[in-house]
Amino acid sequence: MAAFCLLPTVYSQSTGGVKGRVRNMNGEAIAGATITAHKDQHDAGTARSGKNGEFVLDGLQPGLYNFVVEARGYAEGIKYDVEIKPGKPRDLGGNLLLQVDRGSQVIIRGSVFWKDGTSVPACDVDVALVEANGQTKPLTTLTTGVSGEFSYRRPDAKATYRFTSKCHGVTAKRDLTVDSAAIYTTSVLLPINRGEKPQP
Image 1 (tube, one colour):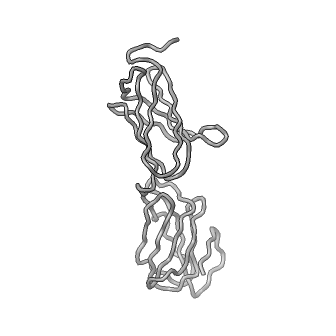
Image 2 (cartoon, one colour):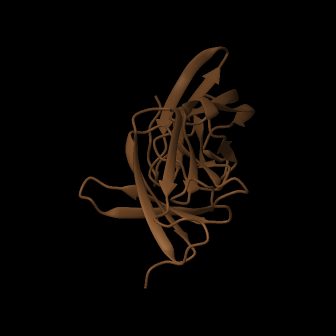
Image 3 (tube, rainbow, N blue to C red):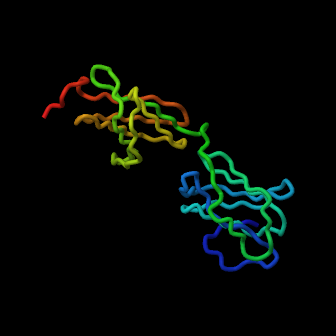
């Protein structure tokens, strides 16, 4: 039987297991990932990662296992031919890395324009998550390309994002609510025409 515990203290002398940490390609911990042990084409046990991406899956009979790692918004990962021996769980360290599943992403494509409709290149765009209480949580800062374009990706989740453009002394904001994995478009309109000076 598989068990999940961050601080195991007692292990069976006849069975073994694995422990480790699930991360994404940026090195960030993935909480809630499912780690399943497969032996001889059968599921032998399952564990879930904690908030720091850590997990322990024990109670496994000695032998060779494949470990399948799954998490929402990420492509499946497999660790092949891991030998399990009796005693303390084998430490896989932080080598369980998952790549983002592009098909499970929110992709936002945006543009920044002057009031007269011309594009604004090299403009900073601050991205923030708008929380339920109206507060914002800063996420990242993007810079528009030569045609005033920017792109932002997030794992599939319903959320509202705020894009704040800051350029040539003026600021403009635009909120966008996303419901599920898909490609969304948005634009931010600066309140002056190209070449104009902002009002003091």
